[in-house]
Image (cartoon, helix red, strand yellow):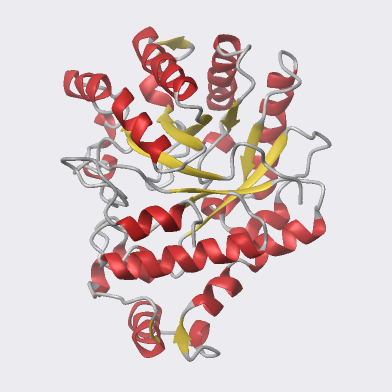
Length: 362
């Protein structure tokens, strides 16, 4: 597989320009509105000190998530003060030799954790706004080709061909202005490795492909409050762990334990199997770059279990030469799935061992 030079091991930043609220709690008419509190949060949440620390951890790139509504004052009109925050972020990254992925984490019509009345992939006007925002980014950062654009985070479980069409339109629009921009495209079903096979492959060496992994979900999202099944089961899940505990989750939640019939233990072999779709993609497209843009564990899981899981996942990545970006640096109390790797107060990594693991130093 081709190398994603400068993007070998990175850190995601959520909680700043995305995941700053629990949108599922808000009434529909307030979900797309910003308040003075939101703007104050954007002003202060991430500073140069954070970027310097991420560089000190040995990360070579940062994936910065943002929401469309944070930039859009109204359709096709953008907030200069938010672009100003990104300008400063880029300057800090330059200072500390950190490469950048700008990721549209939530687009109007594709909030990965909220069902909306009008879907992005079914509405031409929403698609035009989506493309226009990326063109605004391209116009502003035309000379900064070390910045990669990740078109959309976790497209829902929709018709893959609809997403392929919009991705192609967006890439074509960006290519009218910049032939060298690195553009990252993920698959449907929340960037599942299993749906990479449905993703359009572009005759373009600067298109990079991506997936996410959180398997086993009942471990990585254990006792999570945003997903009905983990909230309902409400049980501590060790890793590695007794397979019977995982079977019990599926019996109770899905009335089915077939998924774990062939396993004696929840360990790295399960991780390897869960990533078969990614490995198949690499084997079928050796001239393309495949990057894991997101993986992690909920913060309240035991730190040793988090380390064990992270080590196993990165081991499989290293076996297959997959570059990666962990999720995530810091999350706000408003984020229902807190995946933070640093503490809230001092913003220091939760363990020295975790610091070694995430940079692949094991």
